Image (cartoon, rainbow, N blue to C red):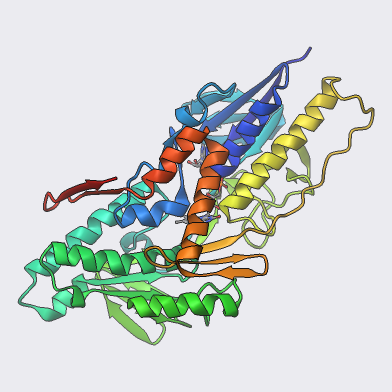
Length: 419
Ligand SMILES: Cc1cc2nc3c(=O)[nH]c(=O)nc-3n(C[C@H](O)[C@H](O)[C@H](O)COP(=O)(O)OP(=O)(O)OC[C@H]3O[C@@H](n4cnc5c(N)ncnc54)[C@H](O)[C@@H]3O)c2cc1C
């Protein structure tokens, strides 16, 4: 029997989901290898909580925990080249990896749209490293604010936090940040009334992709917390301590850029077909149209709901089914002579948007929930995702870590950990 190799590139939602489902299929004579650049999985949906004091243990899950006792080979390498004619990918390490089926799940990266100064001066929210850097910066800004006590103008600049982009990431960040920064200010002897959080959106409403009947309540809640929302404002440039919007400018030392993501640049660099949204064009089975051995999953695939963790998990599972169906017929395990592959059917995600401590808006089909109920539904969605990646006891631990405070202020040595 010919040995088959399934290679998955990317240890995020889509890649891990594909690997776990393939492992459960127990296909004889098949090796499943997951190649990824980091030894851990990053749970992006909780990054804002990491910035505002929660434990990093919820956001960062080691791959060895996810794949303990699984028949999946995990390799740490960054893939730099795709050689479709030779059916191999090449890693930064120099190693070459051969495949019979390849799943590309590289995710997305920050897009600054070429706006001057943003890349140099703003803070991103795409990784644990960026989130921790931002957390440290917030504390430092408040301590500078304390030192500047004799200069009100400087103090206002120090304590002004600007979040650009009122999509889900911007909304959750702004809502949590206003409460967190005021608390931190009090702890560090800074007047909390100096704190301001500005949320800037280019469209005419927050959460532009969602219905106004749903987003109105979230906007109202954010304003109630004290977040200043600016709509119909686009960013023109950023300088060292200033951000320039259409018709206005703001002084600030902290700009958090959440308004732009694009599919990993490698897809384009490898010459894959890219659609208008910058994502890889795929056929009805999430494969390249001219290469049935190569699948694209998650944020990189040009599907209607890509850009959501839920979609990425769904894609990974779907691709695993397609590959398994294909291999089973190849290996003679299927009793059917003419195996038909199931077409990809996009699944709309549930929108669960936190907007401040213990408050979230949830849009689930035709139903809407707000406030603490919404918050608990959102936490249950977190738990559901952990359960899809980890055994029950570990999933519960990761979920519980989301409620733990883990504050280590490296600047003033205030240390707190609470269960
Ligand atoms: C701040 C934030 C909040 C979010 N909140 C939500 C939310 O609440 N709900 C929701 O549904 N979605 C949310 N999302 C979106 C969600 O995180 C993404 O849709 C999801 O991560 C996409 O999964 P993926 O597998 O395509 O990519 P990722 O999860 O990003 O995984 C990509 C993986 O590929 C690896 N990789 C990349 N390039 C290479 C390479 N060349 N070689 C090897 N490995 C490589 C990366 O290191 C990473 O491990 C949020 C995103 C962000 C940034």
